[in-house]
Image 1 (tube, rainbow, N blue to C red):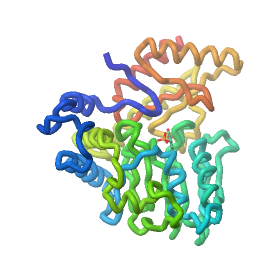
Image 2 (tube, rainbow, N blue to C red; image 1 turned 30 degrees about the vertical axis):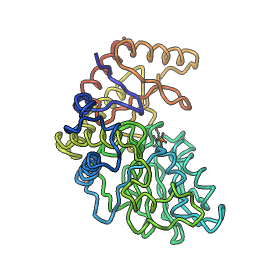
Image 3 (cartoon, rainbow, N blue to C red; image 1 turned 90 degrees about the vertical axis):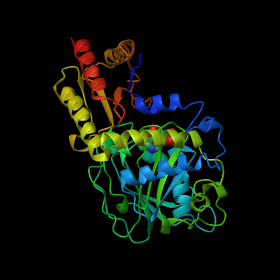
Image 4 (tube, protein in one colour; image 1 turned 60 degrees about the horizontal axis):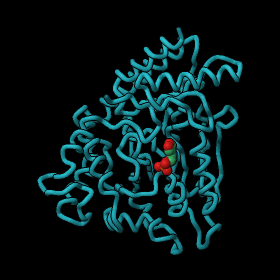
Length: 365
Ligand SMILES: Cc1ncc(COP(=O)(O)O)c(C=O)c1O
Protein backbone atom coordinates (compact mmCIF):
# COMPACT_ATOMS: atom_id res chain seq x y z
CA UNK A 1 0.00 0.00 0.00
CA UNK A 2 1.33 3.46 -0.86
CA UNK A 3 1.39 6.01 1.93
CA UNK A 4 0.64 9.71 1.71
CA UNK A 5 4.06 11.24 2.09
CA UNK A 6 4.08 14.84 3.34
CA UNK A 7 7.86 15.14 3.24
CA UNK A 8 9.37 18.50 2.22
CA UNK A 9 11.72 16.63 -0.11
CA UNK A 10 12.50 14.12 -1.40
CA UNK A 11 8.76 13.83 -1.68
CA UNK A 12 5.96 12.03 -3.50
CA UNK A 13 6.30 11.52 -7.22
CA UNK A 14 3.33 10.91 -9.52
CA UNK A 15 2.42 7.23 -9.56
CA UNK A 16 2.10 7.01 -13.38
CA UNK A 17 5.71 8.23 -13.70
CA UNK A 18 6.96 5.67 -11.18
CA UNK A 19 4.99 2.87 -12.83
CA UNK A 20 6.31 3.74 -16.28
CA UNK A 21 9.86 3.79 -14.90
CA UNK A 22 9.30 0.41 -13.27
CA UNK A 23 8.01 -1.04 -16.51
CA UNK A 24 10.96 0.32 -18.46
CA UNK A 25 13.57 -0.43 -15.81
CA UNK A 26 15.41 -3.19 -17.64
CA UNK A 27 14.55 -2.24 -21.22
CA UNK A 28 13.94 1.41 -22.04
CA UNK A 29 12.58 2.36 -25.46
CA UNK A 30 13.51 -1.05 -26.86
CA UNK A 31 17.24 -0.48 -26.25
CA UNK A 32 17.65 -3.58 -24.08
CA UNK A 33 19.10 -1.43 -21.27
CA UNK A 34 18.09 0.60 -18.26
CA UNK A 35 18.68 4.37 -18.53
CA UNK A 36 21.17 3.86 -15.68
CA UNK A 37 23.31 1.72 -17.96
CA UNK A 38 23.29 3.99 -21.01
CA UNK A 39 26.24 6.06 -22.09
CA UNK A 40 25.22 9.68 -21.68
CA UNK A 41 26.65 10.39 -25.13
CA UNK A 42 24.82 7.54 -26.85
CA UNK A 43 22.05 7.77 -29.43
CA UNK A 44 19.85 6.06 -26.82
CA UNK A 45 20.18 8.76 -24.17
CA UNK A 46 20.11 11.78 -26.50
CA UNK A 47 16.34 11.65 -27.14
CA UNK A 48 15.73 11.28 -23.39
CA UNK A 49 17.51 14.48 -22.35
CA UNK A 50 16.16 16.32 -25.39
CA UNK A 51 12.61 15.28 -24.54
CA UNK A 52 12.96 16.40 -20.92
CA UNK A 53 14.28 19.80 -21.94
CA UNK A 54 11.68 20.29 -24.68
CA UNK A 55 8.80 19.42 -22.34
CA UNK A 56 10.11 21.73 -19.65
CA UNK A 57 10.43 24.56 -22.16
CA UNK A 58 6.91 23.94 -23.37
CA UNK A 59 5.29 23.67 -19.92
CA UNK A 60 7.12 26.64 -18.39
CA UNK A 61 7.14 28.74 -21.56
CA UNK A 62 10.90 29.21 -21.36
CA UNK A 63 12.00 31.81 -23.94
CA UNK A 64 14.57 30.83 -26.59
CA UNK A 65 17.26 33.10 -25.10
CA UNK A 66 17.43 30.98 -21.94
CA UNK A 67 19.50 27.83 -21.45
CA UNK A 68 18.20 24.88 -19.47
CA UNK A 69 20.94 23.12 -17.52
CA UNK A 70 20.72 19.81 -15.66
CA UNK A 71 23.45 19.98 -13.03
CA UNK A 72 24.35 18.30 -9.73
CA UNK A 73 25.19 19.59 -6.26
CA UNK A 74 21.63 20.52 -5.28
CA UNK A 75 20.22 23.99 -4.86
CA UNK A 76 22.93 24.42 -2.23
CA UNK A 77 25.65 24.46 -4.89
CA UNK A 78 23.75 27.25 -6.63
CA UNK A 79 24.24 29.30 -3.46
CA UNK A 80 27.92 29.32 -4.55
CA UNK A 81 27.57 29.25 -8.33
CA UNK A 82 25.30 32.28 -8.56
CA UNK A 83 27.72 34.70 -6.83
CA UNK A 84 30.76 33.06 -8.43
CA UNK A 85 29.35 33.52 -11.92
CA UNK A 86 27.61 36.86 -11.54
CA UNK A 87 29.53 38.85 -8.94
CA UNK A 88 32.97 37.40 -8.17
CA UNK A 89 35.97 39.65 -8.74
CA UNK A 90 39.53 39.12 -9.95
CA UNK A 91 40.38 37.41 -6.70
CA UNK A 92 38.31 35.72 -3.99
CA UNK A 93 36.77 38.30 -1.67
CA UNK A 94 36.87 41.18 -4.17
CA UNK A 95 33.41 40.76 -5.58
CA UNK A 96 30.74 43.12 -6.83
CA UNK A 97 27.67 44.09 -4.79
CA UNK A 98 24.77 41.63 -4.68
CA UNK A 99 21.32 42.21 -3.15
CA UNK A 100 19.59 39.52 -1.09
CA UNK A 101 16.24 39.33 0.66
CA UNK A 102 16.32 37.19 3.78
CA UNK A 103 13.10 35.20 4.08
CA UNK A 104 14.26 32.13 5.96
CA UNK A 105 16.87 29.55 6.67
CA UNK A 106 17.59 28.78 3.00
CA UNK A 107 17.96 32.49 2.17
CA UNK A 108 20.33 32.80 5.09
CA UNK A 109 22.46 29.95 3.78
CA UNK A 110 22.54 31.54 0.33
CA UNK A 111 23.53 34.88 1.89
CA UNK A 112 26.36 33.37 3.94
CA UNK A 113 27.77 31.52 0.95
CA UNK A 114 27.51 34.52 -1.38
CA UNK A 115 29.42 36.59 1.16
CA UNK A 116 32.56 34.64 0.27
CA UNK A 117 32.53 35.86 -3.34
CA UNK A 118 30.37 38.98 -3.46
CA UNK A 119 29.75 42.05 -1.32
CA UNK A 120 26.35 41.03 -0.03
CA UNK A 121 23.74 43.58 0.97
CA UNK A 122 20.65 42.21 2.68
CA UNK A 123 18.00 44.72 1.62
CA UNK A 124 15.20 43.30 3.79
CA UNK A 125 14.54 40.47 6.22
CA UNK A 126 11.55 38.91 7.94
CA UNK A 127 13.65 37.40 10.72
CA UNK A 128 12.03 39.79 13.26
CA UNK A 129 8.82 37.73 13.12
CA UNK A 130 10.34 34.28 12.76
CA UNK A 131 10.10 34.57 8.96
CA UNK A 132 6.30 34.30 8.98
CA UNK A 133 5.88 36.95 6.26
CA UNK A 134 7.63 38.29 3.15
CA UNK A 135 9.08 41.77 3.70
CA UNK A 136 8.54 44.66 1.28
CA UNK A 137 11.24 44.39 -1.35
CA UNK A 138 13.30 47.57 -1.68
CA UNK A 139 14.60 48.44 -5.13
CA UNK A 140 18.24 47.57 -5.73
CA UNK A 141 20.78 50.12 -6.87
CA UNK A 142 22.23 50.07 -10.38
CA UNK A 143 25.50 48.58 -9.18
CA UNK A 144 23.99 45.43 -7.69
CA UNK A 145 25.14 42.54 -9.87
CA UNK A 146 21.91 40.68 -9.11
CA UNK A 147 18.97 40.46 -6.69
CA UNK A 148 18.34 37.12 -4.99
CA UNK A 149 15.08 35.83 -3.54
CA UNK A 150 13.93 32.49 -2.16
CA UNK A 151 10.58 32.31 -3.86
CA UNK A 152 8.95 29.69 -1.64
CA UNK A 153 10.29 29.14 1.85
CA UNK A 154 10.05 25.43 2.43
CA UNK A 155 10.71 25.47 6.18
CA UNK A 156 8.50 28.36 7.31
CA UNK A 157 5.83 27.99 4.61
CA UNK A 158 5.80 31.44 2.99
CA UNK A 159 5.90 32.44 -0.66
CA UNK A 160 6.35 35.68 -2.52
CA UNK A 161 2.92 36.91 -3.59
CA UNK A 162 4.43 38.86 -6.50
CA UNK A 163 7.71 39.13 -8.35
CA UNK A 164 9.74 42.05 -6.95
CA UNK A 165 10.47 44.94 -9.28
CA UNK A 166 14.25 44.98 -9.60
CA UNK A 167 14.40 47.42 -12.52
CA UNK A 168 17.39 46.63 -14.72
CA UNK A 169 19.04 44.45 -12.06
CA UNK A 170 19.00 40.69 -12.75
CA UNK A 171 16.54 38.77 -10.59
CA UNK A 172 17.73 35.36 -9.34
CA UNK A 173 15.27 32.98 -7.73
CA UNK A 174 15.67 29.86 -5.65
CA UNK A 175 12.51 28.08 -6.80
CA UNK A 176 13.36 24.71 -5.28
CA UNK A 177 10.02 24.24 -3.58
CA UNK A 178 7.67 26.08 -5.95
CA UNK A 179 8.98 25.18 -9.41
CA UNK A 180 6.18 23.85 -11.64
CA UNK A 181 3.56 24.46 -8.94
CA UNK A 182 1.99 27.34 -10.88
CA UNK A 183 2.81 29.36 -14.02
CA UNK A 184 5.73 31.76 -13.71
CA UNK A 185 6.95 34.38 -16.18
CA UNK A 186 10.50 33.19 -16.86
CA UNK A 187 11.35 36.38 -18.76
CA UNK A 188 11.26 38.34 -15.47
CA UNK A 189 14.20 36.35 -14.11
CA UNK A 190 17.87 36.08 -15.00
CA UNK A 191 18.32 32.74 -13.25
CA UNK A 192 15.82 30.30 -11.76
CA UNK A 193 17.29 27.32 -9.96
CA UNK A 194 15.81 24.34 -8.14
CA UNK A 195 16.84 21.08 -6.59
CA UNK A 196 14.76 18.36 -8.28
CA UNK A 197 13.58 16.44 -5.24
CA UNK A 198 10.20 18.15 -4.74
CA UNK A 199 8.21 18.88 -7.89
CA UNK A 200 10.62 17.68 -10.56
CA UNK A 201 11.96 14.22 -9.82
CA UNK A 202 14.52 12.41 -7.70
CA UNK A 203 17.29 14.09 -5.70
CA UNK A 204 20.59 14.43 -7.51
CA UNK A 205 19.58 16.68 -10.39
CA UNK A 206 19.59 20.45 -10.11
CA UNK A 207 17.74 22.51 -12.66
CA UNK A 208 19.14 25.88 -13.72
CA UNK A 209 17.31 28.12 -16.18
CA UNK A 210 19.62 30.95 -17.16
CA UNK A 211 19.39 33.88 -19.57
CA UNK A 212 22.14 33.56 -22.13
CA UNK A 213 23.76 36.94 -21.54
CA UNK A 214 24.57 35.89 -17.95
CA UNK A 215 26.70 32.99 -19.13
CA UNK A 216 30.45 33.51 -19.42
CA UNK A 217 30.91 36.12 -16.69
CA UNK A 218 32.79 33.99 -14.15
CA UNK A 219 36.35 35.08 -13.39
CA UNK A 220 39.19 32.88 -14.64
CA UNK A 221 39.89 31.38 -11.21
CA UNK A 222 36.39 29.85 -10.93
CA UNK A 223 36.60 26.02 -10.78
CA UNK A 224 35.61 24.61 -14.15
CA UNK A 225 32.64 22.62 -12.78
CA UNK A 226 31.21 25.76 -11.13
CA UNK A 227 31.08 27.86 -14.30
CA UNK A 228 27.76 28.13 -16.14
CA UNK A 229 29.60 28.43 -19.46
CA UNK A 230 31.20 25.00 -18.92
CA UNK A 231 27.80 23.32 -18.73
CA UNK A 232 25.93 25.56 -21.19
CA UNK A 233 28.58 25.05 -23.85
CA UNK A 234 28.23 21.27 -23.65
CA UNK A 235 24.46 20.83 -23.35
CA UNK A 236 24.79 19.77 -19.66
CA UNK A 237 27.31 17.11 -20.78
CA UNK A 238 30.68 18.54 -19.84
CA UNK A 239 30.84 15.54 -17.55
CA UNK A 240 28.38 12.72 -16.92
CA UNK A 241 25.01 14.28 -16.10
CA UNK A 242 22.50 12.73 -13.66
CA UNK A 243 21.02 10.62 -16.47
CA UNK A 244 18.42 8.66 -14.54
CA UNK A 245 17.14 11.76 -12.77
CA UNK A 246 16.77 13.56 -16.10
CA UNK A 247 14.80 10.59 -17.44
CA UNK A 248 12.45 10.57 -14.43
CA UNK A 249 11.92 14.33 -14.73
CA UNK A 250 10.82 13.64 -18.30
CA UNK A 251 8.23 11.14 -17.05
CA UNK A 252 7.01 13.59 -14.40
CA UNK A 253 6.63 16.24 -17.10
CA UNK A 254 4.65 13.80 -19.27
CA UNK A 255 2.25 13.41 -16.35
CA UNK A 256 2.05 17.16 -15.83
CA UNK A 257 1.29 17.75 -19.50
CA UNK A 258 -1.46 15.13 -19.40
CA UNK A 259 -3.00 16.87 -16.39
CA UNK A 260 -3.28 20.02 -18.48
CA UNK A 261 0.00 21.82 -17.68
CA UNK A 262 0.80 24.47 -15.10
CA UNK A 263 -2.55 26.26 -15.11
CA UNK A 264 -4.33 23.00 -14.34
CA UNK A 265 -1.88 21.94 -11.64
CA UNK A 266 -1.96 25.43 -10.07
CA UNK A 267 -5.75 25.13 -9.77
CA UNK A 268 -5.37 21.75 -8.07
CA UNK A 269 -2.67 23.10 -5.77
CA UNK A 270 -4.84 26.04 -4.76
CA UNK A 271 -7.76 23.74 -4.00
CA UNK A 272 -5.60 21.46 -1.85
CA UNK A 273 -4.02 24.34 0.05
CA UNK A 274 -7.33 26.18 0.58
CA UNK A 275 -8.88 23.01 1.97
CA UNK A 276 -6.09 22.58 4.47
CA UNK A 277 -5.77 26.24 5.50
CA UNK A 278 -9.50 26.41 5.88
CA UNK A 279 -9.42 23.45 8.23
CA UNK A 280 -6.51 24.96 10.20
CA UNK A 281 -8.19 28.36 10.51
CA UNK A 282 -11.20 26.68 12.11
CA UNK A 283 -9.33 24.17 14.25
CA UNK A 284 -9.45 24.46 18.02
CA UNK A 285 -6.20 22.54 18.41
CA UNK A 286 -3.88 23.71 15.62
CA UNK A 287 -3.14 26.93 13.73
CA UNK A 288 -0.99 28.22 10.90
CA UNK A 289 1.63 30.71 12.13
CA UNK A 290 2.06 32.29 8.69
CA UNK A 291 0.70 35.69 7.57
CA UNK A 292 -2.28 34.86 5.32
CA UNK A 293 -1.02 37.04 2.48
CA UNK A 294 2.14 35.01 2.08
CA UNK A 295 0.97 31.47 2.68
CA UNK A 296 2.74 28.83 0.63
CA UNK A 297 0.73 26.46 -1.56
CA UNK A 298 3.38 23.78 -1.14
CA UNK A 299 4.55 23.73 2.49
CA UNK A 300 2.07 24.26 5.31
CA UNK A 301 3.49 24.40 8.83
CA UNK A 302 1.04 24.13 11.73
CA UNK A 303 1.43 24.18 15.49
CA UNK A 304 -0.70 23.23 18.47
CA UNK A 305 -2.46 26.15 20.16
CA UNK A 306 -1.35 24.68 23.49
CA UNK A 307 0.83 27.22 25.35
CA UNK A 308 2.50 24.89 27.85
CA UNK A 309 5.77 23.85 26.15
CA UNK A 310 5.93 20.35 27.63
CA UNK A 311 2.33 19.58 26.69
CA UNK A 312 2.86 21.07 23.24
CA UNK A 313 5.87 18.81 22.57
CA UNK A 314 3.87 15.85 23.76
CA UNK A 315 1.03 16.66 21.35
CA UNK A 316 3.50 17.07 18.47
CA UNK A 317 5.28 13.78 19.13
CA UNK A 318 2.02 11.89 19.49
CA UNK A 319 0.58 13.51 16.39
CA UNK A 320 3.53 12.60 14.15
CA UNK A 321 3.62 9.04 15.45
CA UNK A 322 -0.12 8.34 15.17
CA UNK A 323 -0.32 9.97 11.74
CA UNK A 324 2.45 7.69 10.49
CA UNK A 325 0.55 4.67 11.77
CA UNK A 326 -2.42 5.91 9.74
CA UNK A 327 -0.28 6.03 6.58
CA UNK A 328 0.35 9.81 6.70
CA UNK A 329 4.10 10.13 6.96
CA UNK A 330 6.78 12.79 7.42
CA UNK A 331 4.63 15.40 9.14
CA UNK A 332 7.24 16.64 11.61
CA UNK A 333 8.30 20.27 11.14
CA UNK A 334 11.89 21.15 10.23
CA UNK A 335 14.33 20.27 12.99
CA UNK A 336 15.22 23.97 13.44
CA UNK A 337 11.66 25.25 13.89
CA UNK A 338 9.73 22.28 15.29
CA UNK A 339 5.94 22.00 15.07
CA UNK A 340 4.42 20.10 12.18
CA UNK A 341 4.43 20.68 8.45
CA UNK A 342 2.48 19.17 5.59
CA UNK A 343 4.25 19.49 2.25
CA UNK A 344 1.70 19.06 -0.51
CA UNK A 345 3.61 19.24 -3.77
CA UNK A 346 2.10 18.58 -7.20
CA UNK A 347 2.06 14.81 -6.77
CA UNK A 348 0.09 14.86 -3.50
CA UNK A 349 -3.48 14.00 -4.49
CA UNK A 350 -6.37 15.90 -2.92
CA UNK A 351 -7.38 12.58 -1.31
CA UNK A 352 -4.15 12.77 0.70
CA UNK A 353 -5.05 16.22 2.02
CA UNK A 354 -8.57 15.03 2.86
CA UNK A 355 -7.15 11.99 4.65
CA UNK A 356 -4.90 14.27 6.70
CA UNK A 357 -7.78 16.55 7.64
CA UNK A 358 -9.93 13.55 8.64
CA UNK A 359 -7.09 12.24 10.76
CA UNK A 360 -6.61 15.65 12.41
CA UNK A 361 -10.30 15.96 13.22
CA UNK A 362 -10.23 12.56 14.90
CA UNK A 363 -7.02 13.47 16.72
CA UNK A 364 -8.62 16.65 17.99
CA UNK A 365 -11.66 14.87 19.32
C1 LIG B 1 14.10 26.62 -0.85
C2 LIG B 1 15.24 25.65 -0.76
N1 LIG B 1 16.46 26.03 -1.16
C3 LIG B 1 17.51 25.20 -1.09
C4 LIG B 1 17.39 23.92 -0.60
C5 LIG B 1 18.59 23.01 -0.55
O1 LIG B 1 18.45 22.13 -1.58
P1 LIG B 1 19.47 20.93 -1.85
O2 LIG B 1 19.27 19.94 -0.77
O3 LIG B 1 19.05 20.46 -3.22
O4 LIG B 1 20.83 21.50 -1.85
C6 LIG B 1 16.14 23.47 -0.17
C7 LIG B 1 15.97 22.10 0.35
O5 LIG B 1 14.95 21.67 0.80
C8 LIG B 1 15.04 24.36 -0.25
O6 LIG B 1 13.84 23.97 0.16
